[in-house]
Amino acid sequence: MDKLEFVIENYKRLSTEALIEIASDPAALELEIIPHLQSELFNRNRKEEALALSEYLVRRPKALKDFSKSEIRDKIRERIDSGEPAESIKLDLKDSGVDLFDVLNDESLLKDKTLEYLTNLKEEGLEDTQIEEKMKTAFGVTETEVDILKKELKQRGMQNLVIGYSLVIIMGLLSLATLGTDHALTIGGVLLFGIGVWRIVEGYRQRR
Image (cartoon, rainbow, N blue to C red; front, side):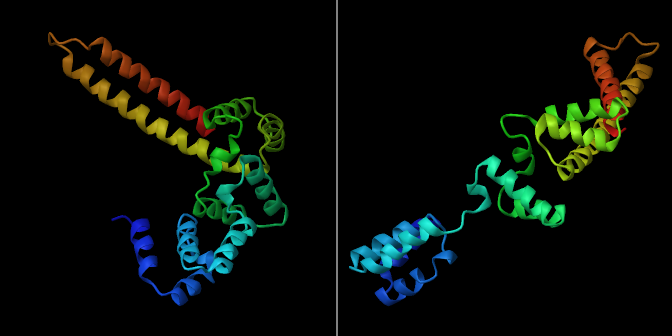
């Protein structure tokens, strides 16, 4: 028996007074449970309490995850403009089950695309203010969101460097081991070495 089934069965066993007490604090209930509580109240002819739950569902404050992406972005900007720290907003989004980068990449603008554009802007040697302005124009992101993307880019750069150097070192050692033997480095090995070099180059681009 799963949690929902257990709750439904428990409602059937509880007294009407106990159900009314539970219904008096709907904010403490999970949304999927409320219809079953209403059903049990209707079965006991407690229409007023059951309808009060419907009114709560209509008027309850929307959770962040219930907003559209554009609405969430507007909420984020409002909170930033009010002076709230970006880290506080980020943690709140995470606790609410909202992926910040999913919001940033609204309208199918993938994270890879935003990070690649940011990398290109940095390679052009632009100042931070110029980068922020171009990112805002291209993707509608704020200064705070650009800072988050920069940190993500540096993390990706470090990951690429670690992977790249690991591949190059491993394939280099394998090449040395095959010297003077009949076992030449395979095409796959050469390809892995090339991927390692590419990862290193990409890592330095992203870490700039």
